Length: 448
Ligand code: SF4
Image 1: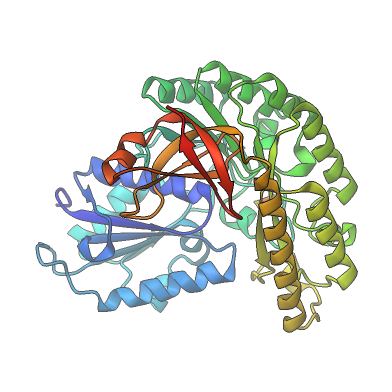
Image 2: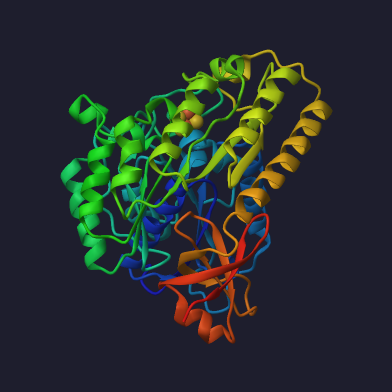
């Protein structure tokens, strides 16, 4: 019944959600459905949701609510437009979403993605609405078809879930406890990606550094890096990395594995030990800085990025200044800054929070200015140097500017003579001379 129907997927949140969306796309294509770019062209719209921050929650509700006003696509053979909600909000709110959003037909969670095809078929064939959520699973579950956004780049999940319970975070509640994927499966998946022509593999997990603790009693992420490196893939990246679990063995791999890219996202969250403790991060600012020192010893050119939360309950001006110090000291190429967002059910939600909103906003602005200044200074160091860029596509539709990522994970723009030239570059790794640095990207020219 669904064969020939069209679908669109709107994804919020992290890379894990983006990968889940690729799997949703793969499963729906196996039903004979056809992916389309926009919601109005789709018979079925799937929202892959994120509940980590309040804003994403609100944006989802706004977008789903507006679906009521979108007419059926002219060629549709259905009497209605089907709306599905998956991902973390689906997992968290379940059937309550069917009550609050009467035009939503199907809600599924993070642990039963594989059930989507038959749930959707039931909804369409039996003209029902349903919510299907399961509490968790005991095994790693990734044997699902996927349709990758880019043929040359693949996400490779090695863990799901998280055991860390940072006090502000809902992930352990909606994604469950950490489950590692069997080592041999990761090795086989990496080799299979390489045989398909994949050039860049990004290993995924809420905390890749603790990979294997549940299966083997001890973390084995360094060995995963060795195995994926041996697959011969040209580029390896990974996300996300918890500082408390970043081992010397993993740091060493930045010196020894040629295909491990010299870029690391290492979320610091705060530079204040008191706030780190309140966040249950289980490291100090001094420990974090010692990791940065070790990383720079083994790989002096490593590019570092991070996440920072401003306005965590109880954050004083002094705490905030410590965060600014760490930003200055590390010299990040990129910092993702967030204003603390209360999440129901987390320990931080119960913490006393009497910092006025305007003080938090003012700190956020100060940090933003500092981050921009730091990113511009860090990018300046690349001017006049060669970068090897994996091209992804066009920077802006119709601009003729090709966009890609350097080995350091920085966005590089190259002006070409036409859109066709941009398309011809996509998926290729080529040398680029960096001519100019901007705050968030570099400009360069191709070396012929
Ligand atoms: S490590 Fe902390 S912030 Fe990251 S997913 Fe786990 S609980 Fe959330």
